[in-house]
Image (cartoon, rainbow, N blue to C red):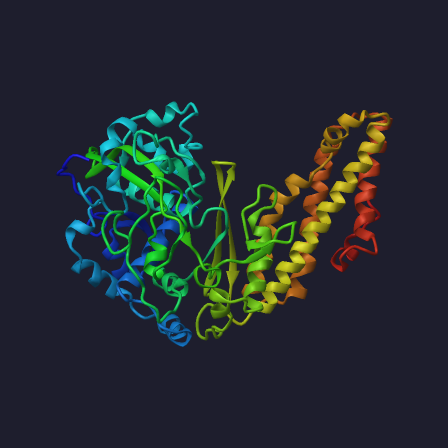
Length: 523
């Protein structure tokens, strides 16, 4: 990268939007985020993943500055007494300016300057930096959009880079290994948070959020990864795939460089101090993660083959349907973050809903990002058992309604298609299947149930109303599906059969007891 007089420092320049407690939105630099952490509700991001990546970066700064609890007892005191995080801002103020320049000619923040000789020839437009816009990265695909030179403001590029480090997808980079740093530079590995659901405890304020998510430790926090070529950590080369390197403390973990990235700057226009107009991305670091130490937020789940792995985003199962797993992890004190949350005392003299469990995952089709999936589960210390019961029963009722709609669709199909071709059966039944609409609509009643229980309502008092809500939705969606039947005798019989079957499922001895009072003969 040629020497540049363009400088952009996230300690001095606005790098993220933040929401204040009074509802106003403002843009702040890193130092002000920590100085005002108790008057800010949250940080914002263009996507949920970007928000998580920025919080990861702030956690790394807490560790690097020595601002973290040493044991669970101290963590509990930090959370209860709202210990100040202004020490992080003071530490940032003392750091050398050259360490924090996103566009430093020899040590750019968060980047690999070894890519500099190849940026002009092999780089692309800044869209490659943004996970949602990059496609599958492949050098063999037709990606004309990546050549577009529309610049990206420095702050947006900085946040997108952090998101790549955390969530970057596996695939083959567009960079040429033969002509650059070696054949393995094209082999992009899944980021540290990619392929799994990351869970953050979101508190009343930004400061509360950071304290909740700091893992107490007496170990050295390790090095903060400012750039690829500086510091005590010897980075990998790209002649062959290396073994994962050990993690050297929580500062190292939260600031790890999951991608080799290099950004080309130019002076900004329209109020932007600096922009990025060209990007080059290659393979980054591989970490040897200890599940107990480095995945403290992970909720372990079993695959169909019996392998235990952290909860992962699914294309067929909405993330909100996993809330019961989060509450179960707390109730059972499953370790890490969940054990600490379980032992927090119920707070007196203020709103009992002290924080939320915010789950985020990146859904991908092979190596191309599809969408971010998120879910927010309310939480109140002292009501873990009630929330677990409500989420579990709420899920069971929703599952039963879905099965009932499936059987109602089959009942309509049997009459509407008396002589079907086997190859057409699936599509024909889908004509009457309202499960998709039902699942989408169930999220709101489900969250309402959890909110009510969080606020102190009894689970037994909430479930009948929740069940009635689901049945009302289901009957409406089923009727809309049945409206496609012709108004003849066959159509009327198919419609009556579907409605009757749905009613019988609700009245079955196998049905949850909450549906018993809602049966009206299948009408």
